[in-house]
Structure formats: C-alpha cells, structure tokens
Length: 143
Ligand SMILES: [Cu+2]
Image (cartoon, rainbow, N blue to C red; front, side, top):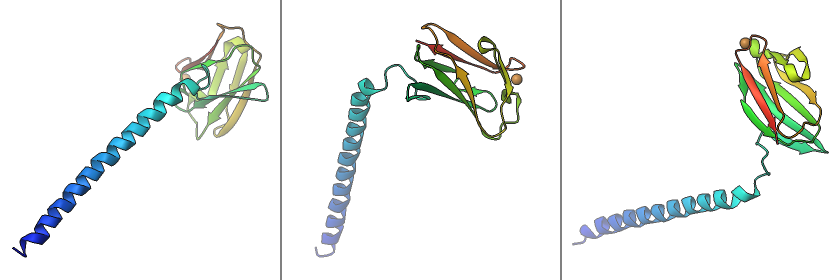
C-alpha cells in the first residue's frame, strides 16, 4: 500500500500537468485570436506593411534580389513618394532596374539602399518596375 502511494501521486501530478498545459494552450490561442481580431481594424488604412509615411513623405520598401519583393504594393495616392530599393548581396539582374513611367534606368548597388523619387500619383496610377531583361517585375498601385 505504501509503495502504491508515490505512484498515485506521480500519476495525479502528470494529470495536473496535462490539464495545466491544455489550459495554458487554450489561453494562449484565445489571446492570439483576440489580438488578431482586435488588431485588424487598427491596421494602417490600406497601406501595406512595406509602407510608411514620415513627415508627409511616403516611403515604399522593395527588396531586390533574385526578383523583387513584394511583387505588389498598394500605396496612397496624392503623397510625394520615395521608393527605397533594398539590396543585400544582389548580383543578379534585378539590380538593373527600369521604371518606364518614371523614365528611370539605373543600377542598384550590390548592397544598400537606392532611393527613387516618385511625384504624388493620382488614384489608380500603377508604377511598374522591372529588371532590364524584363524577367522580374514589381508593381505599385496608388489608391
Ligand atoms: Cu532580369
């Protein structure tokens, strides 16, 4: 009887751990769902997460390496804009960038940031960028 007692308490100890884990996991997933639901309406208007507006200038970050990312950006119309092309060890042709609408042609440095000024765009305007060979591209749509 005495030897059974530790076994019993070990068993109940494990059960209580399992129950605690289930409760904790439930609470965590509840909190996560809660945040994502309450976070959605507060998200910055229609701006994508690669956009920030500082002192009235809209900055759009696009990564160039083996293509462009994000491929599509929705930005705000009517705001002077700077596209920041970010490179990090970019030695492929995505460093040779053409933006026809801006009459821009340039080579991005292999690593760093190249800023391209874009005058405020009308709603509905789309600016396309592509590598000089035309195999990679990205689009910024202004709304
Ligand atoms: Cu290319």
